[in-house]
Amino acid sequence: MPTTRLPAVRADAMPAQPPAVHHPPLQIAPEAFLIQQLHGEGMAPVAVNVNSLVIRGAEPVIVDTGAPNNREQWLTDVFSIVDPLDVRWIFLSHDDVDHYGNLEQVLEACPNAVFVTSFFIGERMGVLLDNPLPRFRWINDGDVLDVGDRLLVAARPPVYDNPTTRGLFDASTGVYWASDAFATPVPSFVENVDELDPGFWAEGFAQFQGMLSPWLSIVDNERWYAQDVAKLVDDPDLRIITGAHTPPITGAKVGEALELMSRMPAMGPVRLPEQADLDGMLAAMNAKVA
Image (cartoon, rainbow, N blue to C red):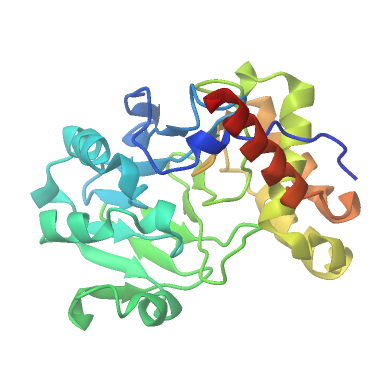
């Protein structure tokens, strides 16, 4: 069971504010660009990535639409890479606000784009979106999306906290968008997990997967979970793991990340922040004001 307790975020850092520092888009593979945001940078002992992805191929794809607190910069970054009129596909991995935060703005700016999602997301978000059914494309785990010069596979990650979650794999570049899976805290901005202390990464990785998927401690590892991880381990085309809450994972770190993921059911429940932690944060904030 992980013993590391991640430093708490300051209470006065909790309101949604634009990121303190802008990190420009990062090209992680041919025609694949990570739209980067770091939540908590400069306000907390650790920070968390809030990323999206743009695939600029024959039929450009926006993968997730970022958090609303960074809307102006996010839209600027995305449309510096691709003209909104050229965007043909908008893929939403799941319906958490840090993934759909700018969806309405993107749908409006990209009139030629199809909204790629699942039936369940459409049901859950139906009251939020004024989107005609012909503009939807429903996709499930294992389905293939043809975007002209490449085939993208909807591949659900091994861990998730939302039943609508779908990852996205591009075999032409080896890039796997893992949505919330493989998440990790960072002490400061890094462009690759290679820059993280290995011990910090392993402990933070376990903590975040455990928070993301508390069901891991009761899962049938051999029958179900191990098979899901093995699908990624056995894929010879997988070369880069990226996602909303991790720096890119490349090279030897891909194998290490998959090994860490395979151990998760044996780690047991993680300790979650509780009322005593909140009381301490509020006391520290009040003392600072006094």
